[in-house]
Image 1 (cartoon, rainbow, N blue to C red):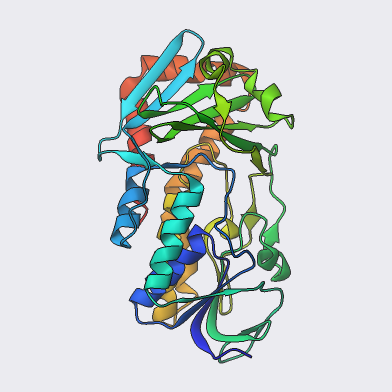
Image 2: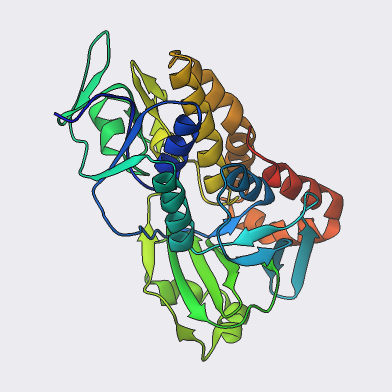
Length: 345
């Protein structure tokens, strides 16, 4: 059995690493357990909103990438765009973000062990997890969290499932905004992540090969024509995941493990960073139950906006009206973007 620590973090992705950093700053002893030794890639849009970038900088993490100044909604013959009021965000490769957080965790003296947390037992004084002993445990083991399931916290999600796929192309960005291209049953998210690299993620309720789904966006397909693929296609889903609650005794769920509505608004990293800080505070205060209320407060804006937008755009006639509405109502579009770009906290 490893030496006991204040906090054991199961999962070494951005959510788990950010939790470890916050906990270490609060004077807690921390151990991170992650089955993969290498930097972890993931299918995601890779756009950091201004709030997420500010939260990373507060942790001393400033990953390289490409500035993004706002959001553009695109459909054939129409384009609505708005700038972030709080200043630029940044397009950052997921691997670059993970490497920067991991380096910061190691520099802080936090142990990162290779392994997997499979079984958790609790008593009045702490948690035992596969040979590790800690006062508390944070489960940050991802969208399809095995720990969420084993703790009896998983809830079957409602609504039509959606999946995401992402690929990079070796191409100089043609815009400094995240472009969201709308089609009948899919969206394509274009994010500049370097001076010579663009990420293109496609979200859809229809399961099909990446190239087939990309065919729903002829203008974007034409823009990408001839560009060489710079990464393999990665997929994720179903994206909607739910939990009964985020606290089970001395175990707290952070990041996607605690539930995920949809990738539609691109707030995933910002939410994970806000939850990481809240979980660390709850552990430091020996008040794990307080995290549930904090989680609800931190995610309320995201849950309402995202669930509302997903519901409103499920009917195909409504989807077709999204970009025209944004064109006709620019103040409303700008207000929605700014609400999502604010820091989570």
